Length: 126
Image (tube, rainbow, N blue to C red; front, side, top):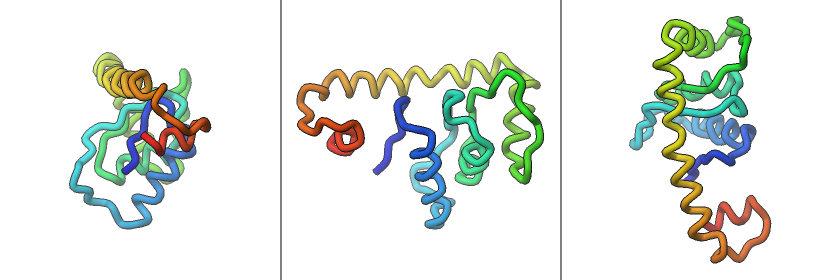
């Protein structure tokens, strides 16, 4: 099972999302309602894949984003949501603190108990 956290690299998240879509997981039992991420995960592909999996993307956009969707309608929809109601978008996006607090707690609790030294293997051990 993969649990993305605040320290998951964008390319790793993109790879997991692509694998889910390619393997036909369009209807997952544990439904994702909302995916919140900071600007490090911002890409048209990520936003479109999140939407394709049935979730609503809330990814912090850049200061002056391009509205050109290049075949990814979810990108334009997300940017329009940021312009139509920026306060509601920011409030929803700022709920990331819950997930970040959970993973911070797990890291503090198990950091000394982990035996693997490299970051990738350490995350797998937990």
